Amino acid sequence: MSDLLAHSEALWQAVAPLLPGFTVEVVPSIDSTNSELMRRARTGLMEPVLLAAEEQSAGRGRVGKAWHSRAGQSLTFSVGLPMAPRSWSGLSLAVGVSLAQSLHPDVRLKWPNDLWLHGRKLGGILVETASAGGAQASAPRMVVVGVGLNIARPDAQAVAALQDSGAALPAVAPAGVAEVLVGTTAGEVLARVAPPLLQDLLAFESQGFPAFAQRFASRDALRGLEVQLSDGQRGTACGVGEDGALQILTSEGMRGITSAEVSVRPC
Image 1 (cartoon, rainbow, N blue to C red):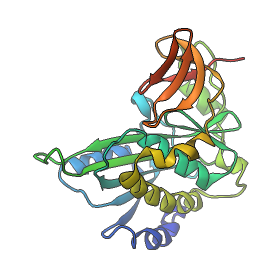
Image 2: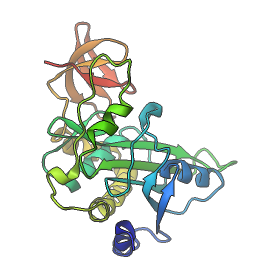
Image 3: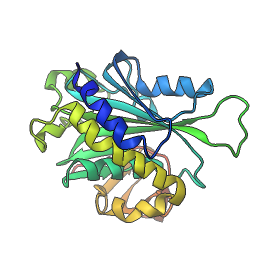
């Protein structure tokens, strides 16, 4: 029995009372857990589900970036849940807060969707939504939350192979959960983070991002740092607004950012 499968029953027992009809699926290999749940949602399958994979052959990150996934070395899973919040703003931040607090006090959040450990990337989050054909605009949509976490610190050669040859600076070696939770397996990490994540998704649906704002502030990796946006503008990160927008103090004043890549400028 695989490590992930060994923990699936306990995970289901922890979540099922909160979500009638909830299921846990574990597959040895798949192109992308997010892609699979999005395909299902578009055909009308809206039941709450957690899909975990030992390996992903075409894992996806934000803005189309690939996610390197190897059996036992990483944890990749997606949660599909029908939701109808008043506002979707800040959902990826709420997910990040939940994961960070479940993992370790040293885990920080880099707006909008990265988890950091000791200044290095530990994992990423991809949030997508879909509705079945013909669904009313006011009806719940299926939110698919994809999570990728490094369990072991990724092999340096594998990281180098994925490096963008056009990047101005070399990639910083990623972090791994095993650095702070020595000996912890992917299945154990899944059992640790998934039940609180489902609870927090339900809390987000009823309360929105304001309920997570203070929790995010305590884990904000960018606050007070000089950052550069994808459009080249620079400024100082000053936290996030009530809608989860990144607040950047620029030479022209405060600017709210809702969708842009942010990179920390080296000191």
